[in-house]
Length: 136
Image (tube, rainbow, N blue to C red; front, top):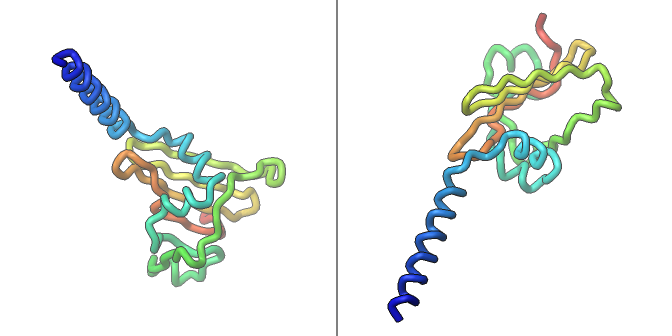
């Protein structure tokens, strides 16, 4: 009986350690990014709406006021860039400890920006600027 209690206690302890390890692991950004673009439900779960940013082809007033917010009801799902369809695209990704910013230059004088942030060990889209003329 004593061995059974010890075995049970050891199993509980091992399970708790395993769960703590998984809870404290920081989500890999590259895996998140791939899933973000391939799974619509996952994508929506990783955006806290209303989302700060700017609409596509924004009027100058939006740039000055900075008061635009994306709503879940009008959100267009983001897909991975098809480089064959858009061969002139240039993507710059700036990685910091808990933040990743993506700048996409479409090669036509237009581009977009997205910022992802690490929250409670998971990545979230926290800022999005739709297609707009790039400032030189």
